[in-house]
Amino acid sequence: MKNVVMGLIVGCLIGGIATALVIKSRVHWLAALEFETDRPDVPFSVLEIIQDAERQSYAQRSFFRRGVEEMQDAIVFLSPEIGYRTNFSLGRYRIKAATLETILPWAIEQGYLTLNDTTQTEFAHALAYFSEQPGLNDWQASVYLEWLRRDHPMLVDLTWPDIAADPLLIAKLYSGYMGAGGAWEQWRADLTPGPVALRRLGLADNGN
Image (cartoon, rainbow, N blue to C red; front, top):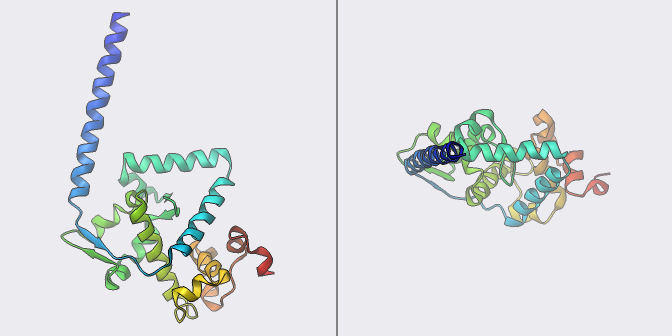
């Protein structure tokens, strides 16, 4: 019995030391990243609609799928690099690091991101971890939505107040947010939201 107790104590000590070393490494890694963010003028009302749609979609998934996604979020805290390389959909907005990494040069050019003594590659490798930080997750979603607005030939001429006042325009952006089913040219061709976006936003009848 004494050996068992000693084994447990030693195991706890080793686990505690290992955890402390991981935390220390994480602190140094984060401290080395120097950057500034400036959030686009995407209304918080639009962000809340997108976030609610993702939350409801998540809630409707199977118990197993929800468990897998919760594990993905947990893995990012343990190893941000694994989260980056596996390209999980993370955070309140279920954003993939690869999606954001693609538009980082544009975000820098537009002044939404300023890197100080931090390379674009170093910042990109932290994107998955940042998805778990509410403030940075809001920034990520805002930047991507602003990119989508400017990428669409008809949405680009509309202001955010215009878009925020029209649920169908929000749904159109959300269609792009979800990847437009890979049919980007079709997505850019009109202002008609996709059926999945309409359903998730409770607008299916409006789209008929």
